[in-house]
Every structure is written in C-alpha cells, then in structure tokens.
Length: 242
Image (cartoon, rainbow, N blue to C red; front, side, top):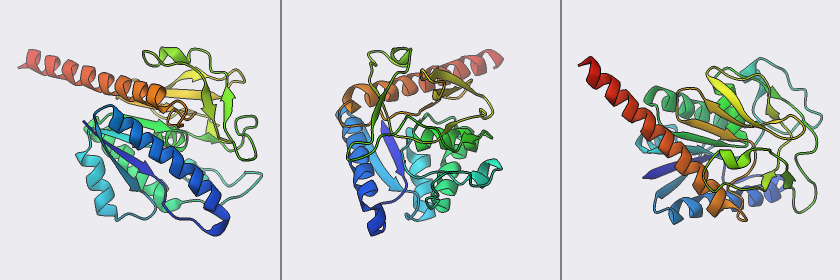
C-alpha cells in the first residue's frame, strides 16, 4: 500500500516560520505513522511541486491524505473574506488539492482529509465553511486544544480520545454526498464521510505525534477497508450483470 500525503508548502517567510515548523512536525509524524503500518508514504507540497508530479503522485497512490495548512480561499465557496484576522491564502495549493480530490472521486480512490484537508474535501464537493469559530485553537507554544467529540471511538477500531484540535474554521453547509458523522460538544462538525465513496474527513489532528500511531493508523485502515469493501461490492454487481 502506498499513501500520497499532500501538504501546502515547505518554506514560508520569517513571519510564518514558527507555523511552518509546527506543520513540519505534524507532517513528519504522519509519514512515520504510515511507514509504521508497513505502507510506503510520499509527501508532496501542493503550493510548489510541479503540477504534473502532483497529479502523477495522486494517480499512482492507493490512498490520498490531505494534510493541514492555511485557510481556504472563500471565493471557492462563493463568499468574501469575513475573517477577523486576514492571513494570506494559498490559491495554487487550493486548486491543486481540489484537483487531487476530484481525481479521487473519478477513480473512487480512498481519501482521508485532516483539518484543512477535511474542509477542502467539503468545499471541493460544493460545501461551505464557517470562516471563524472560537474555542478550538489555543495560543502560545502549544496551540492544540483537547476537544470533546462524543462518539470518536466509533470511527475506527481502537480509536480513543483525545481529539486534538487546532482550527478556527469549520465545515458549514455540507457538500454533495457528504454527511456529518461527529460533532464536538459545541456543535462544530468534527468528522464527515461520503455516502458512497471511501472518503473521510476529520477536523482534529490524528497525526499529532502524541496520538498518531493509534489514531492516524486506525483511520487509514478504516478508510482502506471501506474502499476495499466498496470495490468488492462493485465487482459482485458487475458479475451478476454479466
């Protein structure tokens, strides 16, 4: 099994250096967890890698993982910028990762979206975002907030709290074929799934180094199993028609 992991970028300005270090640690933890499963992993920067290599990576993968990063351009879901603090958008990364999602739709390729990836999955399928929510991101050196998400253990065997969040945006109106699976205690959508495709999005960070070897691996196996089950079902239907 090979998982292609898509993040935003590898370099930022001095002002964004601390944020980049945080994302680098999360991304490295994700790669390590995938490899610990006995799978292979490749990491791709959607804002800077050549377009042809990004598309090839997604099409050659058995599973796609969309990692965390910057806020998504609200023009993609028909809104202006209503954020209280306006940070730059990564429009090329938005465009390339949406292309990866739509390729996964056409190929029925298993996909896991994490934080930004969860939000971008919703936007790619026609949904919208809440541009600012409070209480799901901390300040200082540790921005992760342990969030109460009832039912988190139902997503995958052995999955247990904490749900470590670091976001200020959230899914609002759901995209085509998506349904909300889990909510936090304050009503924020914390997990979404597709009604027929092997797609799952989670708003928290299962790739955090403190939980990755239990949470991320459990979610990847759950998405993989759903994809395999769906493929077997399609084969049985095709055989009956023949």
